[in-house]
Amino acid sequence: MTEAEGRGRPVELPEIPFNVAAVAGRELEYIQQAIQGGHPASGGEFTRRAAQVLAEHTGAAEVLMTTSCTSALELSAMLLDLQPDDTVIVPSFTFTSTALAFARQGAGLVFCDIEPRTLSVDPQHLASLLDEHVRAVVVVHYAGVACDMEGIQEVLAAWPEVRLIEDNAHGLFGSWRGRPLGSLGRYAALSFHETKNFVCGEGGALVLNDPVDVDRARVLYDKGTNRRAFMLGQVDKYTWKDTGSSFGLSDVLAAYLLAQLEERDTIQAKRRTIHDHYSAALAPYAEELDFQLMQVPEGRESAYHMFYVLLPGRDRRNDSLEMLRKLGVQATFHYLPLHTSDAGRAFSVRETECPVSEQVSDRLLRLPFYNDLSEHDVDRVVAAFLDTASATLRDR
Picture 1 (cartoon, helix red, strand yellow):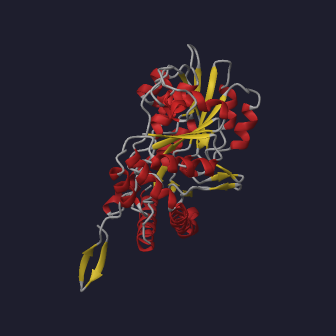
Picture 2 (picture 1 turned 60 degrees about the vertical axis):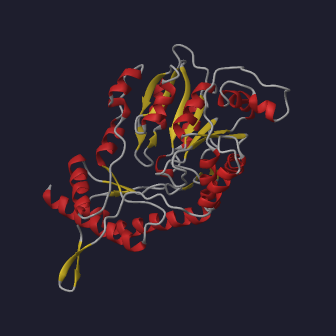
Picture 3 (picture 1 turned 30 degrees about the horizontal axis):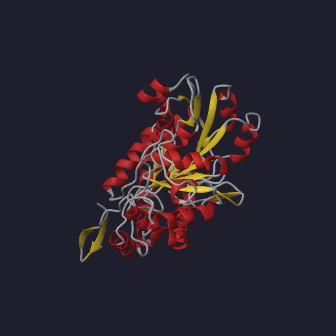
C-alpha cells in the first residue's frame, strides 16, 4: 500500500476503488414510495417520470424503460425483423452485448475497426464493409465521447435503408454539435448499470427517435400484446399481437433512477471536475513518460463516463496496472476485441481485420472514476500513475 509519514512510522492509506455507486438525492425516499404505493412492477409512476426526463432530453418519440442496456439492444434487434442472410455491423472494440443482441436474433455479424481519436467506429472501414445484406450499423460513443458522426453519416447516405443504432451506454448527457447523444440514430440504448454515471443497480432504456417505430415497439415491449394501446384507451381490450418479451423496468428501480436523473447537473459537474483534474495534472508529463491522454475532439461535449490513458504496449500497460494495485489504486483495462473471441468468430459472416481495436485493447488503462472521488484521491491516483509510468519506462 501507499505509505505516508505518521509519527515516524509508515501509515497505510485506504485503497482507492475503481468505481463506487453513490446515493445522489432522494433515492431512498422514492424507493419507499414505490414500494408503499403498491405497484412495484414495471409501468408505474416512477417509470413514467424517468422516461419523460429522458424523452425531453433527447427529443425522442418514445422512451421505453428496460431491465438493462442489453435488453434495450435486444428490443432494437427485434424491431429490425431480421431475415436469413441479414447482417449487422458492430464495432469490435465494445462489450459483448453490442453484438450479442443481434446475433441472438439471427443476424450475421460483421466487425468494424475503430479510429484512434475517439475509439469508435472508423468510417473508412465501415464504408468497405457495407453491402446489400447489411440491415443496421451499431455505433458506440466510447467513454461518453461522440464518434465521428459526420464521417458515419456521409458513408450511410449511400445506404438509406441501413438503420443506425446508437449503443449509448456511456454517453447520456453528452452531445455532438449540440445534439444529444442518443438522438442521432433510429434507436439508441442506454445503460443504468452500477458502473455508469446514472445508476439503479441494473437498468436501461430504448430511445425511439422515429414515431413510426413506437406502436410496434410497445407491443414487443409488452410481451407481444397491445396492452399499451389498451391502457391509453385506444382499444377496448388487449390481446396477443406479435412476438416480444418482458422488458419492463421495475418501478422500484425506476424510482432509484429518477432520483439520480434529478441530480444530473450536480453529477455531471462532479464528473467533469474529475476528468479535467486528471487531464490537467497528467498532460505535462505525457510526452516525457510516453503515454497518451484520451481526446475530446472539437464539436463534442463529453458525458464524462471515464478517464483513460494509452500506454505504448501491452507489457507496459500490464506492468503499470500491477504496480498501481500495489499502491492501492484499483485501475483496470477494458474490452478485448470481439472479432478475436470464440463467439465473435462463430457469429461473424466474414473475417475482418481490426488492427486499431487490437492495439488499443493492449494499451488502454482506465483510472478510478466515480462521482464522489475526492480531489485528494485524484491527486493520489495521478502521483501513483506518474510513478508507475516512470518506473515502467525505465524498465523497457
